[in-house]
View 1: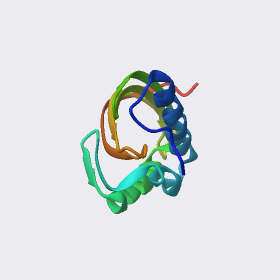
View 2 (view 1 turned 90 degrees about the vertical axis):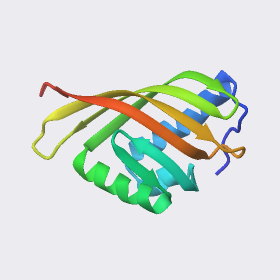
View 3 (view 1 turned 30 degrees about the vertical axis):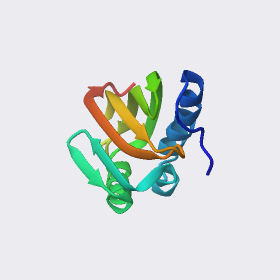
View 4 (view 1 turned 90 degrees about the horizontal axis):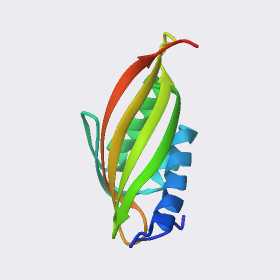
Length: 130
């Protein structure tokens, strides 16, 4: 897969995030992993992940628990090989309770446009059934 590559402009960074958002919204760990290096270092909330195998397992657990997961990314800034992103995600659990996550992510990319590091902090809130 060929991505836009750093150094980022706001336009090329936004193009790279289009892939990221679509991959996560596919709920397919394989599609998400296409955008990450083998030695990915990642923190997603309290989960620490190292390497694609751990990331694949994390994603499988996440999508089993967080059904109908839908992610929206909003680029805040990009410089050299890094991006700051605000995100919203909605999902439901097995009981049907819906949630919305709000947070920020910082991405570090290699020269080929693959994620080397990703750090996300978020807060989940329950939302109504309607």
